[in-house]
Length: 357
Ligand SMILES: [Mn+2]
Image 1: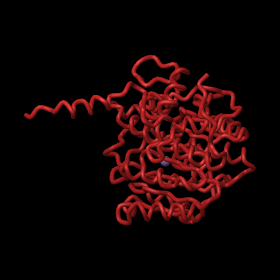
Image 2: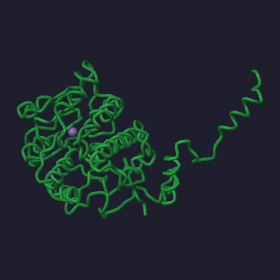
Image 3: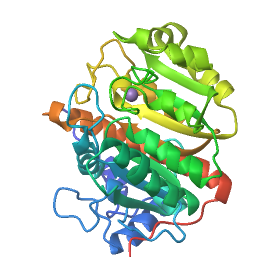
Image 4: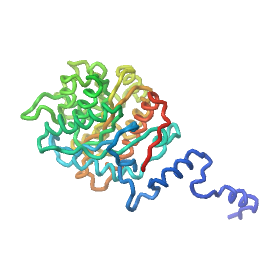
């Protein structure tokens, strides 16, 4: 093997810079500022800020742009229990994500004040009390304070509480909905619970939180398609997983934008929308679904819409012994957070950095 010339070695040694002395000074500035406040690049040990993406855990909302909230609930999950452990598993995995928005090169924590609000606190054991009261009250408070919200479930039923709170906090707004899922979740009341993780969006429409004509449901497939008549009857647009593969992502993205439009919207990501070959750590895994790249592409290409809230639901760590589903969930939560930051910055102009102290 030929020896490297002294000149070449000299040139290469000249490229060796100290840690955090990046050519892009805004990255250096971020690390200098955030690390002084306890943000840590080495996430293996005890962290000063153990919240989502090391966002500061705060309850006071003054000056805050975006709150990430955990909803540890699985009482209304049809199928497997365990999604109540989703928020904590996603938090743990999220420590390894951030701080850069890969598309713009911006740092969300420098653009917006982001907090981990913690988990919704339960006032009792009943499902409808937790959803219609505890979750809804939490999100109404955040919405009335003008915040955008990112909910981490928990079962999909938690989205009903988040939508109720956001809608009521904003003068009973009916949101457009970008819904990624294997299932439409618009079934009829079955048994005792009016709202469960199979009926969330029928109930969200019937309560006026979601406009079905501004709703698109993407990735639908599987054994239970006979349950989703309400989606078609109410005017929702369904794009099945097969159609996504046949028509391609450009078609899906254009269609979603056309249907949702520029009014306020909500993005709900059920992680079972992704193929069970990638995600078995979920309540109702389904094969023949979307790839993680397709879901990421979709989230990254709707930044010009007007999302005021989003969620990632149905992560079930009990079915995720190797932690892969949690790892992917955290990566997708980061994409959802950057989406909300982009939408927020369009409204506020940005320039409101996160403070950890
Ligand atoms: Mn669902």
